[in-house]
Length: 387
Ligand code: COS
Image (cartoon, rainbow, N blue to C red):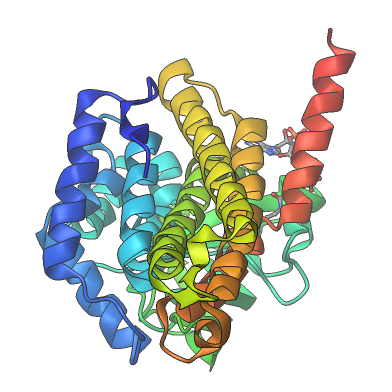
């Protein structure tokens, strides 16, 4: 790996953080085929909390490491954890994504109630936005929240909810009806044990993660669980995604780096036709494409993260570019690594086989590649029109 930590996007603290987390993960995180994803995730959240790593998911006032969430730290950490274990990356990321709407929109009392425990790994967080008929088109969501006295009553279905089934609370986006479409949505925090909230289905996917469909049926929560203003839920969701989407790209980068390492180890040791695989120009071409793809992704990721941290702008388009390029590139890098391994590349339990399954969902969740193209295309036209 080149010395990318020397890039000017980083400060000395970031470089130290990456090295220290790597050493910790080597000692504390087991790699290999995942068995009981629920139990592993619960234990990982507790370990990450005890190790102090979840401090990077919340602001300083509530026990966090920085005044506000530092996106370069998040990205370096996900990149690093993803190289050790998909579930470790997932457990870390969901504490941030799942509590992001509280950090951005919660009252002081709500922040105080949830964030310190998220940071210590004592409460597991989840982000409940998608619905069976509202995935990319968030503005079409149909779950409702109606105010009755001092309570909101929630009814509807949420699906593809990461940490669904093991979370202690969910940040839920529901229609309060101030206006049609995206302007009539509000955000709420809902404790997992609230009567009227149930797990309708656990969802099995190609790389096992805790994932569920949630059912809200006359689910009553205190009106004070509202996050932000009524009608501002869509923007709160988008602002949360603006922070965490770059870190999805960073996780993809971590998977790609792991695949590259495996491919290099294989190519330089596997002998055929009297030489190593790495001596063939076709292998060198594949490795060149992989290495260049990895660096291109890293440059876009840390440009987007630095823009948010240092220019203090949403950088929505830069974030979308990073997410699109890094996830698509990682898929190609991992596919090439499988090819370099030949038959062994598809053998169950091989590192590249796990990565091949692990990477696929990242091109879909937190905004599919097609949504990122929409965001980048719209912004490009807007920039041109305002020239
Ligand atoms: N930050 C703040 N505000 C934002 C925003 C952002 N990043 N993106 C949009 N908004 C605002 C817009 O400015 C607009 O405000 P006004 O109503 O005041 O004009 C409002 O939100 C609606 O925006 P827009 O018209 O762009 O919304 P669309 O319904 O066209 O949707 C996409 C835009 C498709 C980009 C959006 O729905 C999206 O990102 N979808 C994917 C969602 C996703 O990631 N799902 C997975 C969930 S996690 S697994």
